[in-house]
Length: 481
Image (cartoon, one colour):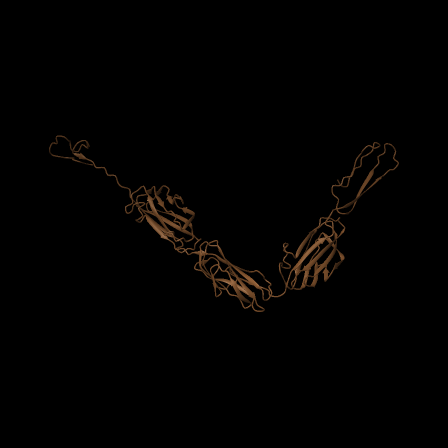
């Protein structure tokens, strides 16, 4: 406010110094200050070159250089297609991962910095423009920023950062053969399967599968190309598999262990290194055939009575057959009686010997198409395990379709017989009286004795002893029940 406060002459329409705003010797100007808040955004990432599938942390730092406190501040940071939102933490306000808006609470005080951390998973590389570029900017503020405008994509309230992900793959290799015990001169087929567990597509994949000296190459049916023992596969999508079948003739002698390994890929493998010749890794596998005698041992087992009485004898019959084509040597069958039986000597076997303590039936040699039989007589005990298992546990030759001693009930060299014994109990009752010629009015004592001669325990036993009309009940004292 300004006014004339003194004058030597008379003013006809105002009086100096009277502080009257209606007079023309006084004037006032009202100033409304503009609130300024200088907001800036800085965005960083903890891992500039992550692998596909890794999590990265973006940090958005919002600073207010003042001079005023900032209110109504919203920062937008919407993840690009190269990332999948996982979680966030912030020092102020809430973050909406769908819209990308970080709405700060209350005021961002002059000189204060607030932080938003966003955890995101790196998606597989698609080649889309700017798929790994991530931007944060102030899009709203209740105060004027002296050097930037919210949501204009420039200025110090706008920050962007990009990562350069490394494509990640997980290739695994399995190798098998259709016949592990072929004869010399016959053909075998080796199958190699490559799987890519992703998350990225594998490119430029090469596999070495060189036949060793024990084989002659016949043909292949590779997906891709198989030239000079190198299988080249241009691409394997995440989740996909490719197959190579190599047919070879078995030679009379030589090395029969066939190894295959992934030797090259353009992308990083999650858990193996191509061409390092480490069999323990999942990108390398091998298979070995046993060229020579082949047998096919099978076993049957039966019992003469599946529901015997406890205490009775049962006879288990085990028969082993060799379907060849070679004679079998060193054949051993294990049939150890479980706890529900006791061995009754002697056993009867068509060949070999049976050790009841070890449960081992040593057959020895069993010619092609020959059979061997063992009969074991056992007594059924009152309690115990009644499931009796027999298995071929030894042979010197390769078996065509089973593995001796591996306890695999689905194989033809192992069988189980289940016996369900009938429990029996031989009960007898003896009744006595202490006075055979009592006088009327005397008290007599009847004693009833129940005895179980087995062989099983008796359960649910009820004895009925109804006094006739010539007696009047006084008392009873049972030892049981």
